[in-house]
Length: 223
Image (cartoon, rainbow, N blue to C red):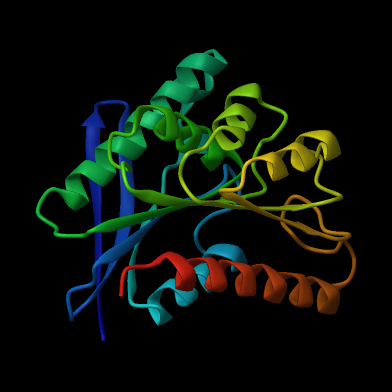
């Protein structure tokens, strides 16, 4: 059985971040912090089923439901300041949730724009000194994201479609030089890891993604 805790963190007058914390009633040793995309919320399939995968493995889940697309102050900022804003929002929620918890391990699962604050955390390690990363459709064209993933010292899973507009074959291939990275390229899938115009093929693709996530969590979680 699980307890669903919905709340929000007010970081300042311009930034309020809702979150959903799904906790097992039996204390879990691990939590997965999920960072959605700009238009791909935690209600969409990759996060919905990813949440289920984690809960099946006795890993609690934290959805950080930032709303940058609705924030006029955010949209007026230059990109570097937007990136810092995203990262500070994520840190604020994680610090609030984890301050009284006893988790021994953090998985960080991000998608698309969520890989930007994840890349920043990978460098600064405010809350992930001993953690594991799941990068869904990372913004690999951005040097900051690419370098954070390429040079990661934390076990990581990278999943991307070969029809994703952020897919760069040379960069994805180079990740194989880091033995800590497992890379999965899902054929014929776009930035949502779906096959355009084919629902059944999309379901099969999402099944492949969930199997990879499940195997990764199973192999690295603390029992």
